[in-house]
Image (tube, rainbow, N blue to C red; front, side, top):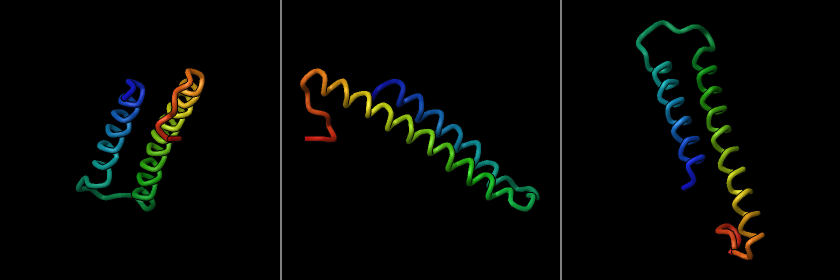
Length: 74
């Protein structure tokens, strides 16, 4: 796996870990706070998906230029 993807996954997992603590901490929460955290989780997942798709597009183009077959188009 490319280092960029591993880094993006590490960032996503760190964000999820921190956000999970916001959901599970024993404290009083404000109205709508849980929804805000869930939306932050979705945004983190979206950033990871964007990175993965961008990497796939770059590697597919590179494979096409070298005469190879990309993994998604066999």
